[in-house]
Length: 103
Length: 156
Picture 1 (cartoon, each protein chain N blue to C red):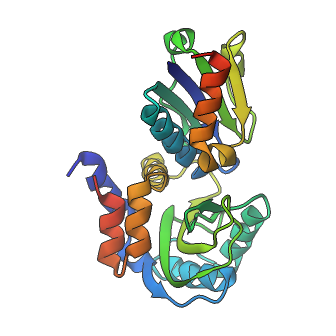
Picture 2 (tube, rainbow over the protein chains, first blue to last red):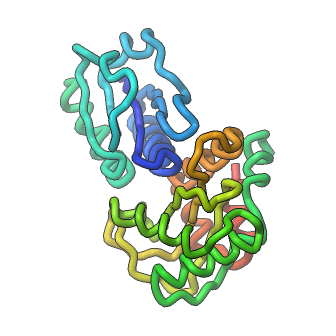
C-alpha cells in the first residue's frame, strides 16, 4: 500500500529526520510505497503533493509540534504519534497502519 | 562516493570527534564535547551551551535507542552550526527510548536564529537521518578511531 506523512519535532534538527528515516525503512521493508515530508528548522522538505496525498492509503503524522497544512489530510485514514514512537517502534506502526487500512 | 557523502564529510570536524572517551556521566560528555566545539570555533561559551543542552534534555529522552544519544542545544552562543561526537569507552546511563544507556553520543550545536547557513543545517539533518540506519549505528558502536567514525557516517 502507499503511506505518506509528516515528521516534525520540537527543535527541528534531529528527531524529525531520524523519524523520517526509520519510517521509510520500515515501510519499504513491509513492501510499501512511502513518502515522508519533514518540517524542521530548515523548513519543509520532501513536500507532499496533493497527488501524493490523494493516492495514499494511510497517513502517518509523527509530530511533537503543530504542523503546517494538517488540513490537507482531512477525510484520510491517519494515525498521529510522537516522533519518539516512530523512532522506537517503526515496524509496529507500519503493521498497525496495515491493520487500519485493511490491506 | 555519492555527492551526499562528499558533503557530509564537510559537516564532520576531526577536532570535535573523540573515541574511547572515559565518561562518568552525561555531564562529563557535555563538558568534553562542548570544550571541543569551543576550541574549534563553533561556540563562544561552554557553560551557556551546556545550559541549552540541559534545557532540551528536560523536554524528553535524547537516547534514541541502540545505545545512541543525540543531545542538542540551540543557543545564541553557537556561532557556527556544528556537530561533536563521542564514542565512549563504557556505556553510561542515559534516558532513552529503549532503556539502554549511551555508548555513542552525537551532539548537535545550532544557532538560535534561522539566518545561519541553511546548507549546513541540511547537512546536519542528513547526519541525523544516517543515525536512523541500523548499519551506521552498528559501525559507530565499533568505532575505535576518528577515521572509523567518519567512515561509519559516510558509508554508502
